[in-house]
Image 1 (cartoon, rainbow, N blue to C red):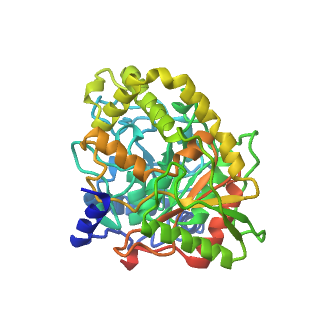
Image 2 (cartoon, one colour; image 1 turned 180 degrees about the horizontal axis):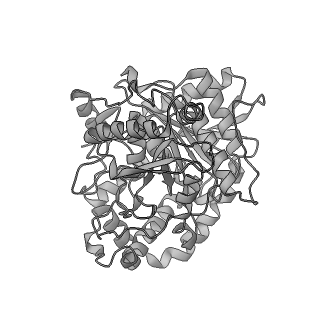
Image 3 (cartoon, helix red, strand yellow; image 1 turned 120 degrees about the horizontal axis):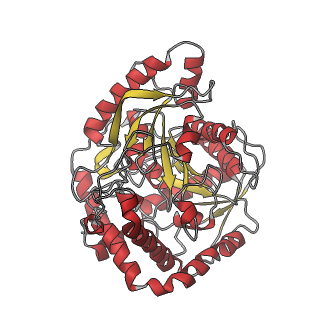
Length: 479
C-alpha cells in the first residue's frame, strides 16, 4: 500500500485529537511564561509539578509517550535558572542517574545509570523539574516511534498517525500540552522530524553548541546533537541561552538570549525538492511555497537554490547509518550484560546487514561525507538561510514505518520520507523546524525548515520569531 493510499485510509477513520490543556497551575503557559509565574509567586514549583504529572498521566494513557515516570519529581532550582520549576522529560537514550536507559530496545535489560549524562547536567542547569523519560524507537534509528511489539507513540493531532522520531515521545507530550518543553536529540533529523509531525518548534543546534554527546564523540563523524522541542520560539531561544551559561563553546560565536525578530532583511534560498531526487508531495510543497511568499511579503529576498550534493550522499549516509547499528551490535554488552543483537528490531538488523555486506566502502563513505561541507557552503553563496521542507511528505499513518515491515520496503519508505534533514547532521550546521501557517486538509501539521551556516542560530531564531509573529502557529485546541 502506498503512502497516499494509507493517508486516504487514515482520513476515513474517526479523527481522535488528544490535548490536556486545562485550568490548573500550568494553564496555557509556555516554559518562559511558566518560569516567570513561579518567580512571581503566582504558582509554586510543587503545584506545577503536581499538575504536570496529572496531565502527563492523562496524555500518556492515550499517547504511550512515557518510558519511565518519576514518582517523586526531581527538582533542580539551579539558583533561579531560566526554567526554574518548569516540568520536563529526558529522552530515554540519555542517562539520568538512578533511572535505566533503555534506548527503545528489547535487545537488553537496562541497568540504572550511575550518573547523569553530560547533557542531562546541562539541561538540569536551567532549573527544570524532571518528571521522567520519554520513549524513542530502537536506538533512535527510525523517523517514527514504533515498535515490533508494544504500542507506538501516537500523534496528539491524530492518534492514527505517527508522532515522528526519534524524539517522538518528547514531541507528543509537548504537543499535547503535558509539559511545555522536553529533551530531544538529533542524529539525522530526530529533533526536527517529530517537531514537524507534531506542530512544534524543533531547533537542531550547531555541532558543539550544546555539550558533546558521549556516543557521537566516538564516531568518525559526530552527527548527534542535543536540544529540546517546544511550542514557542521563545522557549527554544531561552533554552539555548540558559544552556550556554553551563557550556560555552569558544569555537562558536556567543549566542546569548534572542528575544525577537531582527531588522535586517535576509537573502533566502528556496529548496522544494530534495537534492537526492525525492519529489515533495503537494501538501508539503504548498506549505513551503506559502512560507516563501510570506517571507517575500515581509521584505526578504527568496530565490531558488540547488545544492550540488554528491549523488552518492543518500547511499553513503545509509552506509554510515548501518555502521552505527553494527557498532551497537558489537558493543551492546556495555549497555546490559544480557544484550543480544539478534533481538534488535528489523530496521536495526537490516541496517547492520547492509553495512556488513558493504563495509569495505567505509573509508570512501567517510571521506565523501566529510566533503559535504563544501557543497553546503557553496549553496550559501549569496544566501543567508535556506528554506526547505523538513520531510518529503506529510506525517504517515502508524504502521507505514513500523520496524516489522520488510527491510527493503521499510528503508525505501524511510528514504522517501527523510530526504532533507541528514545533511545538517553530516555538516554540523544548525536548522530549525517550524509549523507552517496552516495544516493539511485532514488537520495534520506540516513543518518547514530553515538551515544556516555554522553558528547561525541567532539568525534562524530571529527569522522564526518573525514568522511566528506574522502568521502564528496552528493550535491543537482548535481541532
